[in-house]
Structure formats: structure tokens, C-alpha cells
Image 1 (cartoon, rainbow, N blue to C red):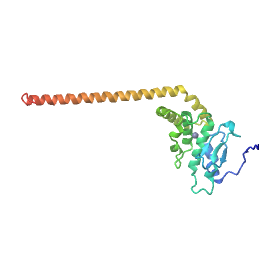
Image 2 (cartoon, helix red, strand yellow):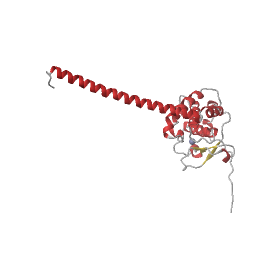
Image 3 (cartoon, helix red, strand yellow):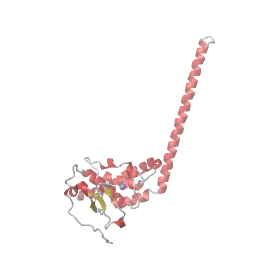
Image 4 (tube, rainbow, N blue to C red):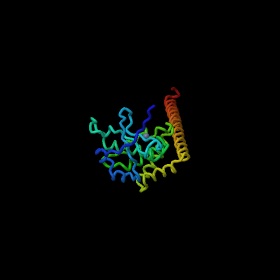
Length: 224
Ligand SMILES: [Zn+2]
């Protein structure tokens, strides 16, 4: 049996990436220790990026498609897309074992807001895929909670690492459960209100019809 192993090889940062992942970018998202990138050739995989469990990496690197920055690529990947992928995978790295949970959604959204500016509104690319591990009926509560926390944390001076910890302490299972119940109660109240409005409408129709029948009866000399 032949046994082999792969080792990581340091390469020159491709010029396309050098321009995107600048010091300014890392300052903007306030990440203390930028996570290294491992470029892989897996064009058929369908993934733009990947974050393997830390113990399966040499130094906690995240993976990005090398193909995305190849000069031979027919259509170049925009700098916005590269940043979006990096921030998504970085959020996975900062929140181990979370997958696409509410806490992941919150951190990713927070960092995408930080990385946005007038030209590249990265936060607009955050979508429900980033919440895909939350069961569908819980999405409204999860989205509301995560959105408002992400928005408020984005403008603080906390580092990305501190934001990740803050989210883990703020978005506990209890808080999520309470919010879920609050949303359910609101939905119940709304449907009861709709039902009572419909009842009042029916009563109004009956009342009005009776009134006009009565008028017709009086002015029709007792004949309908
Ligand atoms: Zn992901």
C-alpha cells in the first residue's frame, strides 16, 4: 500500500485577491486575526468557499476556489463576491459547530454590514440560505432577533471575535424560545382580530338588510 499526505504550500497572493483583502478590509470588519485562505481547485464542487472543522486544517484556514481568481476565467468573480464568500466562511470559523444557525446568520450579517459601503452593499447578499438550519416555522422569530442584534453590533467597536462571543451569550436558546412564543402569540392575536372583524362585518350586513326590509315593509303598506 502506498500512503501519501498533502502539505500546504505558501504561494504569492494572486493580484485579484491582494486588492480585495487589503488591510483596510480587515480593519473595516474589525477582525483581530484575519483567517488565512487555502486556495483549492474544486471547480465542479459548486462551493465558492468552505470552512472545514479547525482540527482538520493546519492553521484554521478557510477554503476558497482558486478558479475564482484565475486570469483565464471567462467571467471574473467580482470583488464583492470574493468579500462575501470570505466573510461567510470567516463567520463559520469564528462560530465553531454552528452551521447555518441563527447565531451564524447574526454574525455573518453583522460583518457583511461592516464590509459594506456605498458601492458594495454586501449585506444585501445575505439570504435565507444562511438561516437554513433553522426550522421553517421559526424563521420569522430568528430573522427578527438576528437582524436587530446584528444591526446594533455592527456599529460598535467590538472586534469580530468579540462580536461572535457576544452573539453566543445574547442569542441563547431561551431568548430564541421566548421570541418564538412572542411571534406565535402575535400571530394568534392577529387571526383572532381578523375573525372578530369578520364577525362584526357579518353582523353589520344582517343589521343593514333588516333595517331596509323594515323600511320597505313600512312604506310598502305592510307588503314586502
Ligand atoms: Zn455556510
